[in-house]
Image (cartoon, rainbow, N blue to C red; front, side, top):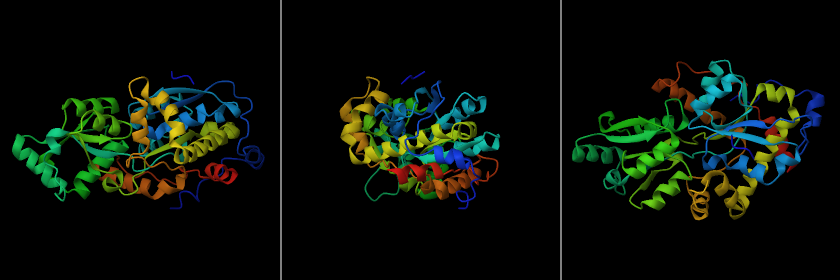
Length: 346
């Protein structure tokens, strides 16, 4: 591997009768010589694409991957717009922006839900007590320090940013005077929390296991479902061009993802070395990856239909906080039939 609610039913046909017959589970992607250009955020929820590649399922279908990593979904939209990606593996929320810009992509499978959690650094964590409302913890921090708690997350429009704001304002009912949201990339957020440059922020695995493992004073305060119910997380989206011109390739990608999600759930010990090789890059040990796979912040799921309603709810909230100018119709964004074929063929 080279590292270089009608919306579902209303999805228009993307595979002709002949193509649909050819695009069966395990079908070989005939005629593709160039690697698939995949954009990915290096988080645990992206593990299925790495597992599908390492297990050889994509190779069996005649596919190789050229991966480019990004710091956030909104950053990846620029690559989609320029036509330099075939596959998008990141949060679903930025795809509303993509559609508003006329970028034609389809969500074909999910990989994880409720993956963004809130972590408090040591200075804030000492104010977090069992049974104490988070808003009161923020108030106490500001009273003690004389400044609002700085909370790191990804850019406006991303799933982590939207999730954090929803939790702060709608769930925790925090006073805006008590917190300050700081936008930064994924790696920078992890490092800022470890260094004490911020008092907390949204993290995903394996970053959660990394920071809590290195500093036990860092605490996991809120799980993804608490922050945004059924929080839509990482999905796999394909360009319309790939779907129309290479249906066998599209089906092979989805079938590989579905098999990988199943394997991760059944045998995390087997996939841990694969994930460590893809995400650890010598910096994260295997034990940390194993903890991340068993973490309460980890919920792998492949069915794209499971995130449709939550995606609509998140988009409505993005309009409320100014991340989107208006709601973008989701009709046609989700294409579940490739998933259904893959699931039926297992």
